[in-house]
Image (tube, rainbow, N blue to C red):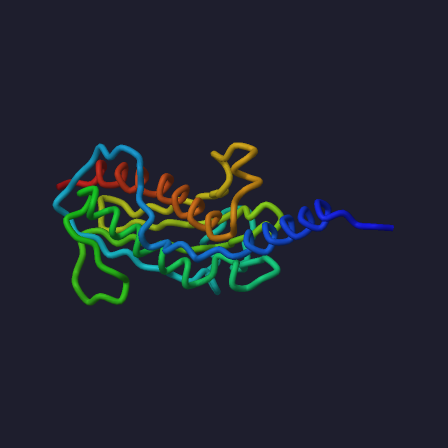
Length: 197
């Protein structure tokens, strides 16, 4: 049986495409920007910090969300470095959009008017479709009353079928960060709106 040159070329081409499709670079999550409109600006300062959900019994109301990150490859999970990069993006966007005059990290000793605590209670990575599901609790304090809200973000929620099929893990993480910014920034605006200047 003789194999034609066309068939060999076809096999080599497909193999090359498959190999090259696996060569992707990480996307810097700390540079992701919020694209929505902002209706509230202030001259207040904020402290944005990450807290662990381990040992806390007050996070999930009526359900248990153990603080886990699942998925077959630990590097592709939405791990602590990604969570910290999200906090940097959130701080940068809150200042860029003038929601706050300044925003510092949780390790800062500078006083702040409003404290924003982000708790990743559960993260999940679906390796087949590169979909990230994040369960996040946000606590706000420093206003009239403290506030705690829970959010569930799915990275592929706005994707077309083609986008879902053609998404890398890094793009999935970037989309998860965008979706989370789309949930949290409006909630922070509402909280600021109810806080006396």
